[in-house]
Length: 189
Image (cartoon, rainbow, N blue to C red):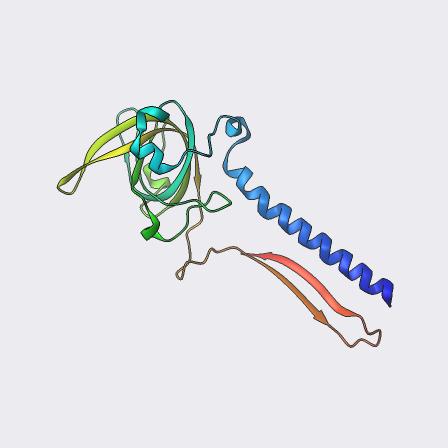
C-alpha cells in the first residue's frame, strides 16, 4: 500500500512537471528562434513612446488588439491598441490597461483580412521611429515598428476566457486497496 501511494505521488509530480514545461514553452514559441537573441524584452511601450529616437533600430516585443489593418502600395500598416503582455507574451484582454497605440508596418504582402479588428497580436519588430496620424480631431504620434514576426492569438471568449484550458484532477477511491482512485491532467479546447 505504501508503494502505491509513492507511485501515485510520482505520477502526480511528473504530470505537474510536464504541464509546467508545456506552459513555460508557450512564451518561446511566440518569438522565433532566429529572432530570440535580437529581441530586447526589457524595452517597454512607454519607453518607446517617450523617447523613440533612443530605441531606433532595437528589436522589441509588444502586444495588443488590432484597431485597423490597411494595405498600401508596398506595405500593410497595422494599427494596434497596446496592451500589456502576460508571462506567455500574450496580450491581456483588459483594454483599460492600454498605454497607447503602435503601428506595425509589414513590407511583404499581408492580407488585412488575416488580422481583422479585435484580433489580439504579439508583435516582434524593429523600432523605426514615429508616425503622426489623426485620431478623430487630434494628431497622435505612434511608435512605429518594422514588423519581423506577428503572433495572432485565438479570440477570447465572452467573459475574458481563452478557448483553451488546463486542468488537474484527482480523487480518492474505495476500491478495497485503500489507495487513490486516480490522478489526471489534461488540456481542453
